[in-house]
Image (cartoon, rainbow, N blue to C red):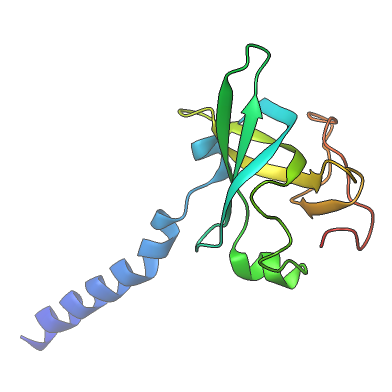
Length: 146
């Protein structure tokens, strides 16, 4: 009886330890590195939610159709440590942003950089600098992300 209980408790413990690993998604699962986006738009909503913060940006295409991009950032705690407050980015702010579109829903993406359009070289957020594969995103100067 003790052996069966020990095996059961070990199994439950192992399951609980591995669950977070399965739950977290990888970049390539949801987003496509071959679908970069770099454009301007107007912030319609900012969500300070865990596990990832989200910024919704309305972009008007050449035909006048508005596409709302749902862009994912890192956690709100990480964003706060970079100096953001609830007033750093507000609905109505015109922004320049870059990122990668989703594999299934293209308007859902991973944000790489964002800056206010009036001061595009002063990045509010930079996930990482440009790579050899994608040199189009602006880079942050040391200390710039706020």
